Image 1 (cartoon, rainbow, N blue to C red):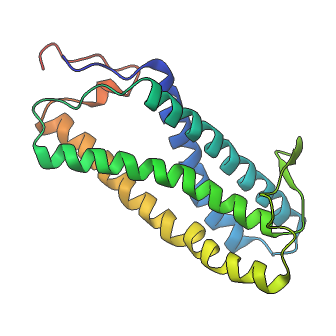
Image 2: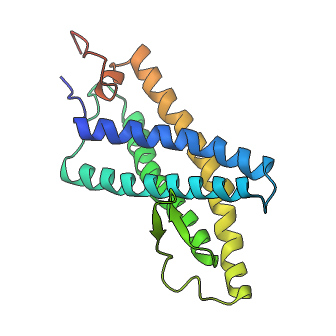
Amino acid sequence: MTERYNGWAIALHWTIAVLILFQIPYAWWWMGALPDESPAHAQSMVLHMSIGLTILMLSLARLGLRLAVPPPPLPAGMAGWEKTLARTTHVLFYVLIIGIPIGGWVLASLGRQPITYFGLFEWPHLPGLSGLDKPARHAISKPVGALHTSILIWTTLVLLALHVGGAIKDQLTGPPVLWRMIPFLRPPTRL
């Protein structure tokens, strides 16, 4: 029988997923709805950056856990192409859940304002970025901003659809897999 993920992996998976599923629509909302120089915009930016930094820290913990405690093997009944797609999707998710927050940190570090973590303490800027002159900051912020706000976010949404779709497909037509990551599901009696 294929094993369930360990409790820490499950907790990190769902915590990161919930934060990302909040973060994306929240960012689209406040960036479009609130005037740029308003106090509400600034408060929303602090919340967005704080959640992004939390995702970064949790994602690094999750990567460390995955390296220390390998995940259970994929079900034996999965086709080779499905296993390749599942592994590729997982690797790309790690790149995104670490890369997108780092991109946000780069953008915040290019500014002159302090980065506050939920208003509790000041988070450090990435070394060397806040001291750049305006043309250099602009040259970096434009491509990093495009990656952070659209390209990588849309890639995340496509991967999320593949990930959820593959899990549901396997649950319905192949070896059931959802019980491995959803805490309240029991393993099937026969795999």
